[in-house]
Structure formats: structure tokens, C-alpha cells
Image 1: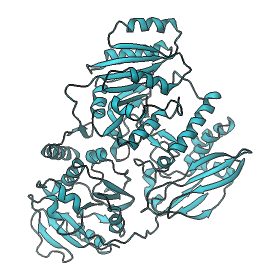
Image 2 (image 1 turned 90 degrees about the horizontal axis):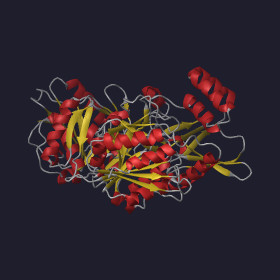
Image 3 (image 1 turned 45 degrees about the horizontal axis):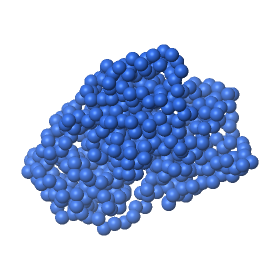
Image 4 (image 1 turned 60 degrees about the vertical axis):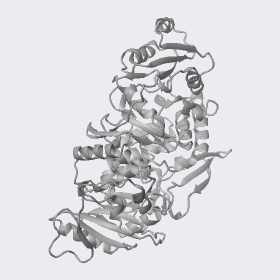
Length: 626
């Protein structure tokens, strides 16, 4: 057991515990929780052949406690907390699966559901000494009649800030009260005001609603975070008392969900360069500034700590969608907004003429799989200009070879024969090299088309200049989630978030209802511009012939400046790895070798996936607290 302090104001980096095992000192790494609230705990099973334990951590880290627990006591705790996991743990122990045994116990004894955030945070909150700055912050509280008590609570919170506000104003939607609170300057909201008009000579603007309660260190933590960026924001507790633990700057998600919200600072330099358009009604003020900032390419910084308790938004989701749609149109943005499927969807244009999509499917034998996926692509997909390239790795099944002969009659189909030993990455690279489309789509042979519009949705995203890879929502045969984006560090290296959850799971912040940024997506269904694919050298067939090649590819796209998007608008079924079988024996040894290479290459991202909050667990595949 380890307990340690950290600095939430520093760049988030999870500590890594390295255990050197056996006679040869083979390393085994454990990625520890981040100290997002100033303090963290870790419980882990140290293998019996451990020779040495090393700890790597960043600035501000202080190891405060090292303890030990007997294995039997952890098993007993598991039995009391999660009896079904106790049975699973014993099963994994009996069959010698050290990793699954360890993670099952950790998931039961060291991971807390997000619903228990209050008690979890209470044991981890530590005061933070913020870096002092001379940033002049104007706080403007948006207030309606009848909110005098809520306004007083907000002003009380502003009065005890560690970084005092340079000025505090109250904007009333209608008439001012006869006896306004003297702690602020009061005015009637002006629908004609621009974003720059609100800052009143300060360096940064903090917009609040009456009833929002910033923590006493909110401005002190946001002020240094604003250095060098356009806006800084923290986490918050919503009106339902649930935490909103946000990712690092994620413009698509921010535009669709408004997650930056009101625990945020906007820099004067940003507001001055925004189009001088009226903000309109007070209810739309925050949305108007956020939308204009994102369209203008604003850069954001995240403080991974709850900095405010916020009241509900005046706009309900359909009203917010209408307001956002009008704002985007007024800003001449290429994207449109509409309320569908319980969330605000961002609709990106399809280039005219629509680009050809080349679909590359690596395959071998398995008539049932290749027949189904080809039928889905050629006859159940609405996209007009497509070609299908099958890269066959030495099929011998006569039925499959006969099916290929039928497919060759379709001018949209080409079949490449690759007789080399199985190398998934090399097969994909060969298929892309033969492609003639501007967009290439990598598709596994065990994927089934569920909706004819899936390819259109992916091409729209992949055609955006700033986007690299695009991934789809993939479901198991029973309708549960198989792929909703990859979190780097999950499970120690990289993993699929929320696997086996119900297919309609909304996800934290409602992010699984909308297209949003992720660090990586699976090559089971991945779209990318062919030019961008070639620009980063395609898949690394030497280092990652079978596993991690897709995650490595997405991260290399990110390093080159292109972001990865996951979209639920493309939903397909995936019978994961049914054609390859389980990884055991030599397959498992090869997997571990590729995993070690991946860990060495992308250790910094493993320590902090920017789209996954440092307080969330890497042990379970849900959105739990560690």
C-alpha cells in the first residue's frame, strides 16, 4: 500500500512503480493513480519473485506512507464488498492468471464507483499552494430576479478567494433590486454587448451564474493555468451533486457538451480577437463565448480538480442546440449543430464531390466472416464511391476461394494475396498502398454493418483537415460495447473504455452520445485520409506486427498534429478476434514483447492520456475512481 501527495497544479503524470522480477530482473510496471485532489492511495499485489522496487514520479510528489497487507485480508475484503468478484479472483488464481487475479482484487478493494465521489474526495483533498500571479480577474455573475440568496452565496465564495478578483460585477437579466449587494457593481444585461465588453479592463474573465460556488482556491489555481493559453477550466460538481471530471482540452466535446462551463477563465487576448458579435440574451452568454472561442481555434488548459459547485444551465439541451446552431451559422463555421439521440450532434460537411473510400480488409479463410462483411460493404452501405480491397493471408478453404471468384466480378473489388507469415500491420500497409481512394478505411473481417450510413459518418470526420484517424462505435453480438475509444494506460498499456457495458451507455459527461476526441481507436474499423496515413509511415509492421499497431499509429498521427475522433454515428458489430483465436503460448509471448515496445515508446501518454481524467481508474474498464 502506498499513500502519496501530489501537486494538482503541475502537469498531470501518474507515478509508475517498476518491479524487477526473477533472476534476470525482468521489469513489470504498474501505473499508479494521479493525485488529482492532492493525495492518492494505491494497493497492488507485489509478485513473490520481486528483487527490487523502483518508483518514478514527477514534481511535487511526496511518498508519505508505505504499508503491507496480507493477501488473505484483501481476499476477505473482496468477499465482503464484491462476492462475485471474490469467486472470479479465486478462479483466476487457480488457473495461474496473475494479472487477472491482481486486477480483480484491485477492482474490488481499491476502486470506488463515481457515485461515491464525495466520500472518495474527502479522504484525498489536500490544500494546494498555487503559484502566485498578478493576473487581474473580473468575475461577472449572471443573475435573474428572485435569485438574491443564490447571488449572496456566490459573492460569499468570491470574498474568500486565495487570489482576489480584480473586480466583481453582477449582470441582471431584468430590473436591479432596490438595495443591491454592495460587494459588487450592478448593471442590467445588455443584449448588444460583445465578449470583449464584459472584461472591463481586466486580464481575464470568469463568468458565473448566481448560485455557483467556486472553491476558495479556484481563481488561484486557474490563474497560473491560463499562462500561454486562451482559456483555463477546472472540474465541478453539478446541481445533481455529481462530479464532472473533464478531459484536457477537447474542442469537439466542449462544443457539443459545453463542458468548460463556468469554472473557467477566458483570457483578454482571446476575447479581443473574437468577432465583435453581440452575445445576445444572458442565457446564451457562456455558450456564445465558448462557441466563438472554439471556432477561432482557442487553446485550453485543464486543472484536474473540482473548483466549483455549479447550478443548472438556463438552457435545456434542445434550446442549447438551437442556440448553438444559430451561433455557428453566424460565425460562418463549417459545422452545424442539431439535437438528436438525446444530445447535441455536430454535423460536419461531406466534401463535394464526395471522396472515394477504399476499404481494406485483411482476412484468411472463414467464409462466414468474409461473406458477411463483404455483403455489408458492397450491398448494405449507402456510400456511393467505394472500393473494397481484400488482403488475403493464404486462404486454403475452397469455399472462400470460390467466393473470391464471385467477388472479382464486381469492378469495385480487388483481392491481394499475401502468403507471408501473419503480420497484420504489413497486410494493412499493402492494402493502403493499393488503394485509390482519398480516404482509406481499415475494417476487420469479423465486423458486420448495422446501418447504411456508417461510412458516410466516418468519411465526413476523416475529411476534416485537423482530423487524423476516425473510429466507430463497435458492439458485441449481444449488443454490449466492444469499442468506444481507446484509453492509453488502461490495463497498464492501452484498453477499450467501458467494454461490456450496455450499448446505450451515455458515458461520463454524456461523451458516448457524441463524436469526440480520444487518444486512439481500434483498427477493427478506422478511417483516415490516405495522405495522412502515408505522411506518418502507416502502421509500424516491424515493431507491432499484430498488436498495438493501431494505437501506435493514432499516437503518431497525434504527434504530427492530427487528432483522433471517435463517433457513435458509425455503429457496427464486432466479434472481436474470432478469426485469430485467444493469445496463449507463443502468441502470448509475442503479445508481451509488443506490449513492452509500446510501453517504452509511449510511456508519457501511458502516464497521462489527455482525454482521460487522472483520478479515474486504469484497473477497471469503467469510469471508476482510483
